[in-house]
Length: 300
Image 1 (cartoon, rainbow, N blue to C red):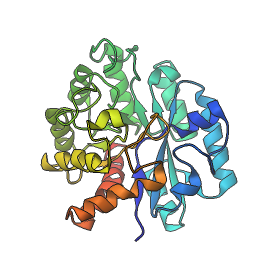
Image 2: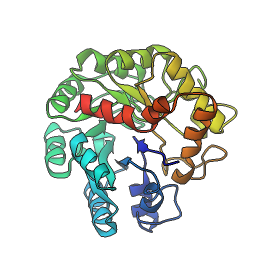
Image 3: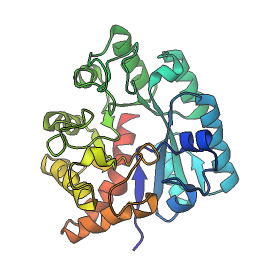
Image 4: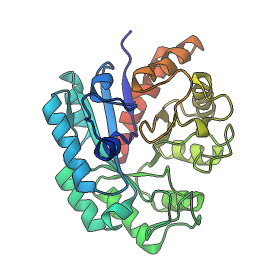
């Protein structure tokens, strides 16, 4: 059985630049060789922690050298990559402070590099908004203007690191769907502030957005295994998320993984587990590929 895969978040580029190795094949949680076992396959590569230019150049160079994938600027380009049997790589930014919270720098990165998904903040408040891991404030005036400008230029807004107040402020000013690329269900694991309340997830669904399953064990709850991953997905499904839940694994951004999943090569076990739990394969394919592609098309 060939499993499709479109993941909304990984930090592998940062791991490679910081610790060495390469994207083609490594000992981290994700590489291009293991990704290529899925078909069709697409992957968001996040830039996190600074060195934006270096990390973007690393990603572009690795894709060119390997021949396994291509950096895409749109869903249309991703579909072309899939037809050619290539990995469709997308670029995202985890924290706009890396680009000085600047609309002009975002525009430059969007036009030059194809950056199409941004977290307004990471784990600290910045000029745009409050973070879930910091003071908890909402959008600033600059943040409101930024959201409008980003969406006007075709850049999607990611709320996975935003405070709850920021979350609701963004939905108030947004003209397009927004997403939470790597956040789980708070009702199943309330210990971590980046998980979503039912009201938050339902609001994303209502606006045509969605949320991605984070594989970080701290986001899953007590069991921390494949079944826990399925439970979070099923909770979102029960809230009307058939076309809104997807994968946002956060590989190489997490120190540990759920039992039974050592890296990207094993994420397909969630696909198989959902089938065993009697979910239609069309639904599971949506969770693993189509849902995120559709949300991306609506939000950019």
